[in-house]
Length: 284
Image (cartoon, rainbow, N blue to C red):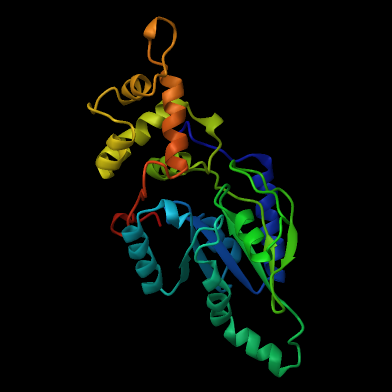
Protein backbone atom coordinates (compact mmCIF):
# COMPACT_ATOMS: atom_id res chain seq x y z
CA UNK A 1 0.00 0.00 0.00
CA UNK A 2 1.80 3.07 -1.26
CA UNK A 3 -0.04 5.34 1.21
CA UNK A 4 1.51 3.57 4.19
CA UNK A 5 5.20 4.36 4.02
CA UNK A 6 7.22 5.76 6.90
CA UNK A 7 10.95 5.79 7.21
CA UNK A 8 12.09 9.15 8.68
CA UNK A 9 15.70 10.13 9.10
CA UNK A 10 16.05 8.83 12.64
CA UNK A 11 15.27 5.33 11.35
CA UNK A 12 18.41 5.40 9.22
CA UNK A 13 20.34 6.59 12.27
CA UNK A 14 18.89 3.74 14.35
CA UNK A 15 19.94 1.18 11.77
CA UNK A 16 23.51 2.46 11.94
CA UNK A 17 23.38 2.35 15.76
CA UNK A 18 22.26 -1.28 15.73
CA UNK A 19 24.97 -2.23 13.26
CA UNK A 20 27.57 -0.59 15.50
CA UNK A 21 26.29 -1.56 18.95
CA UNK A 22 25.47 -5.20 18.21
CA UNK A 23 29.21 -5.84 18.44
CA UNK A 24 29.04 -4.85 22.12
CA UNK A 25 26.08 -7.12 22.91
CA UNK A 26 25.81 -10.78 23.84
CA UNK A 27 22.18 -11.31 22.87
CA UNK A 28 19.07 -9.62 21.51
CA UNK A 29 15.60 -9.23 22.97
CA UNK A 30 13.10 -8.60 20.18
CA UNK A 31 9.77 -7.18 21.34
CA UNK A 32 6.75 -7.77 19.12
CA UNK A 33 3.03 -7.05 19.36
CA UNK A 34 1.18 -10.22 20.37
CA UNK A 35 -1.79 -9.19 18.23
CA UNK A 36 0.37 -9.46 15.10
CA UNK A 37 3.63 -11.06 16.26
CA UNK A 38 5.00 -11.89 12.83
CA UNK A 39 4.00 -8.67 11.09
CA UNK A 40 5.58 -6.70 13.94
CA UNK A 41 8.93 -8.46 13.51
CA UNK A 42 11.26 -6.29 11.48
CA UNK A 43 12.90 -8.57 8.88
CA UNK A 44 16.07 -6.46 8.74
CA UNK A 45 16.80 -7.24 12.40
CA UNK A 46 17.84 -10.76 11.41
CA UNK A 47 20.37 -9.23 9.05
CA UNK A 48 21.58 -6.62 11.56
CA UNK A 49 21.88 -8.88 14.61
CA UNK A 50 23.26 -11.96 12.84
CA UNK A 51 23.69 -15.12 14.91
CA UNK A 52 23.37 -13.46 18.33
CA UNK A 53 21.09 -15.42 20.71
CA UNK A 54 17.53 -14.12 20.49
CA UNK A 55 14.56 -13.99 22.84
CA UNK A 56 11.20 -12.87 21.45
CA UNK A 57 8.76 -11.12 23.78
CA UNK A 58 5.17 -11.06 22.54
CA UNK A 59 4.03 -7.91 24.32
CA UNK A 60 0.44 -6.71 24.82
CA UNK A 61 -0.62 -10.35 25.20
CA UNK A 62 -3.53 -9.22 27.39
CA UNK A 63 -5.00 -7.55 24.28
CA UNK A 64 -4.52 -10.60 22.05
CA UNK A 65 -6.60 -13.75 21.67
CA UNK A 66 -5.09 -16.12 24.25
CA UNK A 67 -5.59 -19.22 22.10
CA UNK A 68 -3.90 -17.62 19.11
CA UNK A 69 -1.02 -16.40 21.28
CA UNK A 70 -0.50 -19.98 22.49
CA UNK A 71 -0.38 -21.10 18.84
CA UNK A 72 2.29 -18.50 18.09
CA UNK A 73 4.34 -19.53 21.10
CA UNK A 74 4.21 -23.16 19.98
CA UNK A 75 5.15 -22.19 16.44
CA UNK A 76 8.17 -20.06 17.42
CA UNK A 77 9.43 -22.73 19.80
CA UNK A 78 9.07 -25.33 17.04
CA UNK A 79 11.56 -23.36 14.91
CA UNK A 80 14.02 -23.02 17.78
CA UNK A 81 13.17 -19.59 19.15
CA UNK A 82 12.89 -18.67 22.83
CA UNK A 83 9.62 -16.80 23.28
CA UNK A 84 7.60 -15.28 26.11
CA UNK A 85 4.07 -13.84 26.07
CA UNK A 86 3.74 -10.88 28.41
CA UNK A 87 2.24 -7.48 29.11
CA UNK A 88 4.98 -4.94 29.74
CA UNK A 89 2.78 -2.20 31.18
CA UNK A 90 1.29 -4.40 33.91
CA UNK A 91 4.35 -6.63 34.21
CA UNK A 92 2.30 -9.80 33.70
CA UNK A 93 4.54 -12.65 32.54
CA UNK A 94 7.79 -10.73 32.98
CA UNK A 95 8.82 -12.69 36.09
CA UNK A 96 9.73 -15.45 33.63
CA UNK A 97 11.95 -13.23 31.50
CA UNK A 98 15.27 -13.41 33.40
CA UNK A 99 15.09 -17.19 33.93
CA UNK A 100 14.35 -17.63 30.20
CA UNK A 101 17.14 -15.26 29.18
CA UNK A 102 19.68 -16.91 31.47
CA UNK A 103 18.77 -20.35 30.13
CA UNK A 104 19.37 -18.98 26.63
CA UNK A 105 22.73 -17.54 27.75
CA UNK A 106 23.75 -20.32 30.15
CA UNK A 107 26.87 -21.20 28.13
CA UNK A 108 28.12 -17.60 28.12
CA UNK A 109 27.43 -17.19 31.83
CA UNK A 110 29.24 -20.42 32.65
CA UNK A 111 32.28 -19.43 30.58
CA UNK A 112 32.51 -16.10 32.39
CA UNK A 113 32.28 -17.74 35.80
CA UNK A 114 35.04 -20.21 34.85
CA UNK A 115 37.26 -17.33 33.75
CA UNK A 116 36.59 -15.38 36.94
CA UNK A 117 34.62 -12.75 35.01
CA UNK A 118 31.33 -13.14 36.85
CA UNK A 119 31.33 -9.44 37.73
CA UNK A 120 31.23 -8.50 34.06
CA UNK A 121 27.62 -8.08 32.95
CA UNK A 122 26.10 -9.62 29.87
CA UNK A 123 24.81 -6.92 27.54
CA UNK A 124 21.42 -7.38 25.91
CA UNK A 125 20.12 -5.24 23.05
CA UNK A 126 16.39 -4.52 23.20
CA UNK A 127 14.95 -4.02 19.72
CA UNK A 128 11.61 -3.80 17.97
CA UNK A 129 9.42 -1.62 15.80
CA UNK A 130 8.07 1.70 17.13
CA UNK A 131 5.36 1.74 19.81
CA UNK A 132 5.69 -1.96 20.61
CA UNK A 133 6.56 -1.55 24.30
CA UNK A 134 10.35 -1.48 24.58
CA UNK A 135 10.42 1.37 27.09
CA UNK A 136 7.62 -0.13 29.19
CA UNK A 137 9.56 -3.40 29.26
CA UNK A 138 12.79 -1.76 30.41
CA UNK A 139 10.98 0.35 33.02
CA UNK A 140 9.41 -2.79 34.45
CA UNK A 141 12.67 -4.71 34.49
CA UNK A 142 14.56 -1.80 36.06
CA UNK A 143 11.73 -0.96 38.48
CA UNK A 144 12.21 2.70 37.68
CA UNK A 145 11.16 5.35 35.21
CA UNK A 146 14.42 5.37 33.30
CA UNK A 147 13.02 5.69 29.80
CA UNK A 148 10.36 7.80 28.13
CA UNK A 149 7.14 5.86 27.68
CA UNK A 150 4.55 7.01 25.18
CA UNK A 151 1.59 5.72 23.22
CA UNK A 152 2.90 6.93 19.90
CA UNK A 153 5.76 5.73 17.69
CA UNK A 154 9.08 7.48 17.89
CA UNK A 155 9.19 8.38 21.60
CA UNK A 156 12.52 6.72 22.40
CA UNK A 157 15.25 8.38 20.35
CA UNK A 158 18.46 8.04 22.34
CA UNK A 159 20.54 5.12 23.51
CA UNK A 160 20.93 4.03 27.12
CA UNK A 161 22.21 1.12 29.21
CA UNK A 162 20.01 -0.06 32.09
CA UNK A 163 21.10 -2.49 34.82
CA UNK A 164 18.44 -5.06 35.70
CA UNK A 165 20.42 -7.47 37.91
CA UNK A 166 24.00 -8.34 38.85
CA UNK A 167 24.58 -10.26 35.61
CA UNK A 168 22.50 -8.46 33.00
CA UNK A 169 22.22 -4.96 31.55
CA UNK A 170 19.93 -3.86 28.75
CA UNK A 171 20.59 -1.50 25.85
CA UNK A 172 17.39 0.28 24.84
CA UNK A 173 17.32 1.03 21.11
CA UNK A 174 14.87 3.34 19.31
CA UNK A 175 12.18 1.63 17.25
CA UNK A 176 12.97 0.83 13.65
CA UNK A 177 10.70 0.11 10.69
CA UNK A 178 11.76 -0.92 7.22
CA UNK A 179 11.86 1.04 3.99
CA UNK A 180 9.03 -0.58 2.09
CA UNK A 181 6.11 -2.82 2.98
CA UNK A 182 5.93 -5.54 0.36
CA UNK A 183 2.67 -6.88 1.79
CA UNK A 184 -0.29 -4.51 2.14
CA UNK A 185 -1.73 -6.66 4.94
CA UNK A 186 1.43 -6.26 7.02
CA UNK A 187 1.28 -2.49 6.58
CA UNK A 188 -2.37 -2.42 7.65
CA UNK A 189 -1.77 -4.48 10.78
CA UNK A 190 1.03 -2.16 11.82
CA UNK A 191 -1.19 0.84 11.15
CA UNK A 192 -4.05 -0.71 13.16
CA UNK A 193 -1.82 -1.24 16.19
CA UNK A 194 -0.18 2.20 16.02
CA UNK A 195 3.32 1.17 14.97
CA UNK A 196 3.08 3.64 12.09
CA UNK A 197 2.24 7.28 12.69
CA UNK A 198 -1.46 7.93 12.13
CA UNK A 199 -0.64 10.96 9.99
CA UNK A 200 0.53 8.79 7.09
CA UNK A 201 -2.89 7.31 6.36
CA UNK A 202 -6.42 8.69 6.25
CA UNK A 203 -8.14 7.83 9.55
CA UNK A 204 -11.49 6.99 7.99
CA UNK A 205 -9.89 4.64 5.48
CA UNK A 206 -7.88 2.93 8.22
CA UNK A 207 -10.92 2.54 10.49
CA UNK A 208 -12.98 1.16 7.60
CA UNK A 209 -10.30 -1.47 6.92
CA UNK A 210 -10.14 -2.30 10.63
CA UNK A 211 -13.92 -2.71 10.80
CA UNK A 212 -13.78 -5.14 7.87
CA UNK A 213 -11.10 -7.16 9.65
CA UNK A 214 -13.03 -7.26 12.93
CA UNK A 215 -16.29 -8.25 11.24
CA UNK A 216 -14.45 -11.10 9.52
CA UNK A 217 -12.53 -12.45 12.52
CA UNK A 218 -14.29 -11.25 15.68
CA UNK A 219 -17.84 -10.24 14.69
CA UNK A 220 -19.50 -10.86 18.04
CA UNK A 221 -17.34 -8.73 20.36
CA UNK A 222 -17.12 -6.01 17.71
CA UNK A 223 -20.85 -5.72 17.06
CA UNK A 224 -21.64 -5.97 20.79
CA UNK A 225 -19.14 -3.25 21.71
CA UNK A 226 -20.68 -0.76 19.30
CA UNK A 227 -24.26 -2.12 19.40
CA UNK A 228 -24.23 -2.61 15.65
CA UNK A 229 -27.33 -3.96 13.94
CA UNK A 230 -26.02 -3.64 10.38
CA UNK A 231 -22.80 -4.66 8.70
CA UNK A 232 -22.66 -1.84 6.18
CA UNK A 233 -21.88 1.81 6.73
CA UNK A 234 -20.18 0.80 9.98
CA UNK A 235 -18.70 4.20 10.82
CA UNK A 236 -22.02 5.89 10.19
CA UNK A 237 -23.70 3.36 12.49
CA UNK A 238 -21.10 3.90 15.22
CA UNK A 239 -21.60 7.67 14.90
CA UNK A 240 -25.34 7.31 15.52
CA UNK A 241 -25.02 4.82 18.39
CA UNK A 242 -22.44 7.00 20.18
CA UNK A 243 -24.22 10.27 19.47
CA UNK A 244 -21.35 11.53 17.35
CA UNK A 245 -23.38 13.87 15.17
CA UNK A 246 -22.62 17.11 13.40
CA UNK A 247 -25.04 19.96 12.71
CA UNK A 248 -28.20 18.75 11.09
CA UNK A 249 -27.76 15.29 12.61
CA UNK A 250 -25.16 14.23 10.06
CA UNK A 251 -22.93 11.36 11.34
CA UNK A 252 -19.44 12.49 12.34
CA UNK A 253 -17.54 9.75 10.52
CA UNK A 254 -14.13 11.12 11.54
CA UNK A 255 -14.92 10.94 15.27
CA UNK A 256 -16.34 7.44 14.87
CA UNK A 257 -13.16 6.35 13.06
CA UNK A 258 -10.96 7.70 15.85
CA UNK A 259 -13.11 5.99 18.50
CA UNK A 260 -12.93 2.63 16.72
CA UNK A 261 -9.15 2.75 16.32
CA UNK A 262 -8.55 3.95 19.88
CA UNK A 263 -10.82 1.31 21.42
CA UNK A 264 -9.17 -1.45 19.42
CA UNK A 265 -5.70 -0.31 20.46
CA UNK A 266 -6.79 -0.05 24.07
CA UNK A 267 -8.19 -3.60 24.13
CA UNK A 268 -11.73 -2.36 24.80
CA UNK A 269 -13.33 -4.36 21.99
CA UNK A 270 -11.94 -7.63 23.33
CA UNK A 271 -8.92 -9.86 23.02
CA UNK A 272 -8.17 -9.79 19.32
CA UNK A 273 -5.38 -11.27 17.19
CA UNK A 274 -4.87 -10.07 13.64
CA UNK A 275 -2.95 -13.10 12.38
CA UNK A 276 -2.31 -16.77 13.12
CA UNK A 277 0.66 -19.06 12.35
CA UNK A 278 -1.42 -20.81 9.69
CA UNK A 279 -1.53 -17.55 7.74
CA UNK A 280 2.23 -17.19 7.46
CA UNK A 281 3.30 -16.12 4.02
CA UNK A 282 6.44 -16.93 2.13
CA UNK A 283 7.59 -13.33 2.66
CA UNK A 284 8.65 -14.23 6.20
